[in-house]
Length: 119
Image 1: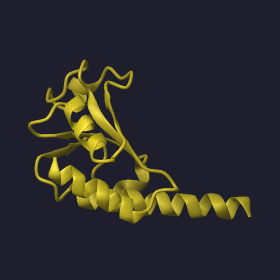
Image 2: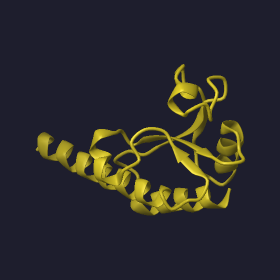
Image 3: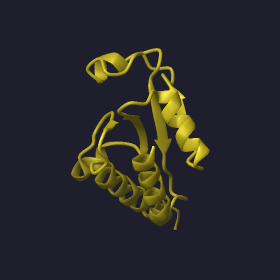
Image 4: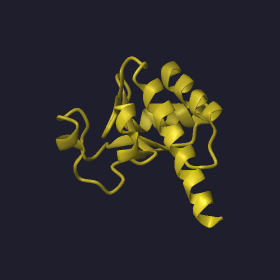
């Protein structure tokens, strides 16, 4: 039963990742760090580093949090931001980070995507 539960969690998180990646691809000015191809979602975690054109990481996180989307911003103890983003993001600033887990729903992903469009 435990193995079946883990498989169900993995399948659900995969569905969440694919749904987020498909929706994120439609948002103008949104950048994602890492694998963004929904067909390769299995190769990444359900934590997403995001940037929105015209907003710094802290401003994006603040705007999302003000709309009930809880996320963080910063370098998250990583020193690769500039290198991995082609210089678009500094090590000091980092990116906003949004994560999904087995307890999240597709409706919540849709709400996050909608708010990412609105900010």
